[in-house]
Length: 234
Image (cartoon, rainbow, N blue to C red; front, side, top):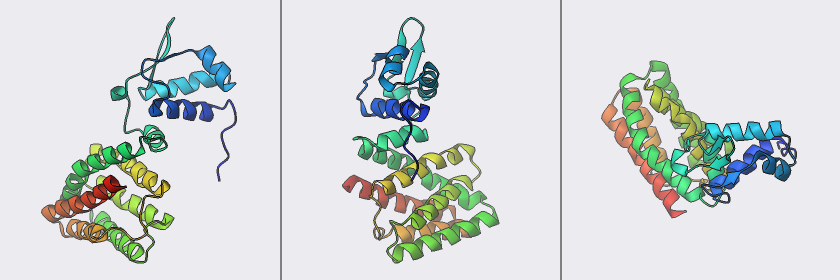
């Protein structure tokens, strides 16, 4: 187990401020001061500035001379950044975060599967099929909630999003990994995947391997739809 952040450390200040802002405990428009944060976290000015700088880069805070540090409106945040996704999943808004990411996946993964079927290298096609077969075997064995299944699932979706050669779709592999790991971390991934989930993963890989973009897109939409309904029901 990793050690807990030390009192006054950069990691602790960053995590606590990020968590509180995403949870709404520090609402939009709130003005913070460096001196106040120093006192609250028993941290140095350097540590506070570092944490504030990271949160500014995520669009969550804005510093202005003689005003202070102001919490920004959520629409301006970098919502797909891994840190924001994790903070959202750690709070009461976890269901909304999972659903919004599943809606994003519904929009992009079928398109990514189509491109993979058209453009993926022979090596990537073979690897995607191997990963799908491994997922199928683990899921049938009732290991859908295992660390091994999660790692294979993450790699499957990463490869699907990157093998089509579109750099914008490839950048979404990070947020997709966050939702997969976040859902597993919350204990929401079933040991035995819902009916059709494994079959659609395998069918997607087979269609990519065969160079059939229509079938790849349809199959990818199939598993995303099933998982989205699972999340809605949780």
